[in-house]
Image (cartoon, rainbow, N blue to C red; front, top):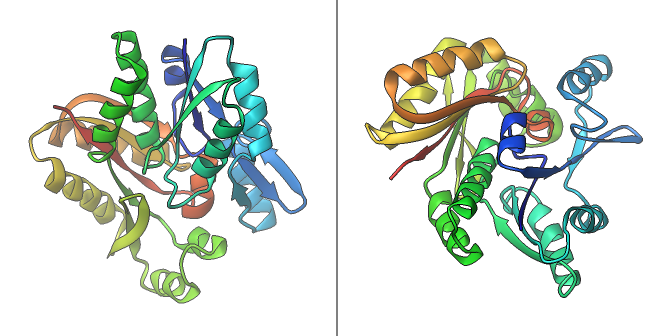
Length: 280
């Protein structure tokens, strides 16, 4: 049987986890001297409450090799193969940890590690596609080849409500965050080749969300597209984005989900955006 594994940076809705049998190894969230397992010991509201109370942004870290080993061994039965699809290696050491363990388990558990070069719901799309291909009778080699083609088409465009979380987490310089605060601008982040870049700053929240839609439209035009809307503690903005996306795009499949804690810790509440993949 093919077991599909991903990590806490993948925004996989619970419905998808069940329907497509996707297993999520949680990220580690460290507040002070206490470490929580994302989604197991700390949920979304618990995370934001701790941030509000402590005025500190937690440190996040990928699962350790020991955690990966225990997870793989618990998951796999004799004869099973694990396809482990993870957050871009350009932003996290998750792929390296998984690859190290895959080598160590050779001969015990068959593990293939795949670098998504993506994040958030982009990883979820790859996991879903892998399961659909497996159910259609495709071999692991055929699935990997298809995923390699698919990951190059996945795009991520996000509107940040603030740069404060990014500043506190060390993702951008303090001066840039201060300037954004003074000017009350809303940064737009794009994931390009596995790296997050702040590409534009728009004056208002509404304008920044419209700009996200425009940027995606510039990329996909009138092509059929699968899409995910993600948000961090702002379901109203997420729902509005879903409505506007339905008006502007030829959508085959769309879903909305929370932005994972490990990503929200760096981008902050109010972040909302689109993950898209054109459909052939």
